[in-house]
Image (cartoon, rainbow, N blue to C red):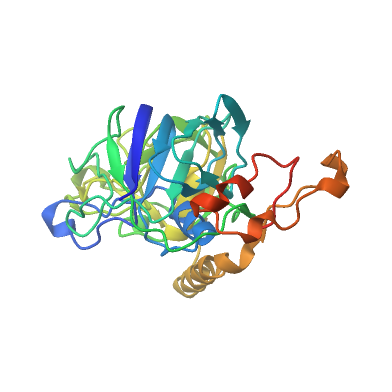
Length: 356
């Protein structure tokens, strides 16, 4: 079995998949990837099931190597990615798939905007499932962060394509979050609901996989009528809770399962990746939509994810960047990148060219 060896890890680096639905009654929220769109994009690049487990880096860093030639894909917030083999180091494109040769060292470092980056591996991470999933749920005490010395078994990879790219679905840099009314929305006056939708919130630096604080940026706090007498009840990711000082907190993948703060609105699941990938200071706006519009938005998002495999393209070199165009290899990528006798055809950089 192929194994990925963790040589170093810093920050919050975890194994994540689609999470564990169905355990709210036991006090465990679904969890899973903070940016499920990135999970789907990586699966599309490697032609794998969308719930294949990957490594999530929350502004973290990772160095790793594999025992066997391994296909990888890089998605989510762009990070600095390098591959070192035989004393030579080259940079890897983000939102793309690559071949990680056996014994080569892969290094991932935080990008300028932070956010959640993902490392996908051919065959996926094949650790033993726990409660139906492989993902770590740090708030729930399930699993933990990856550390130097950890070894992750990888599943059998039935694919061979590498050197593919994907134009990621838009969700970076902040934006508008579509939301529906929550159970306590009616406790806020119409003027506050209007102001909620006019306010340009700033993504606060305080945030993690449990939730994100929305900075009012000088705006007036929000106050619910009788908010202090609300009984604790079930909450879910996407809920916007308003704390006692009037500040909104948006609950994320590893949120608690119950809470007593009033909820002014609930962000649609398909827009939560915008929050996850928003850098501190990014502007976030709330737009309330009705039930019918919300259902159509969710259908559109599902169609966009289903269409990801058709958005995959070969990573091509621009002719003007090739010093010797006549020597450009146009057929090297048609070989199987995972066969040992074909490894030499996996080209190290754009200057040599490669078509999958």
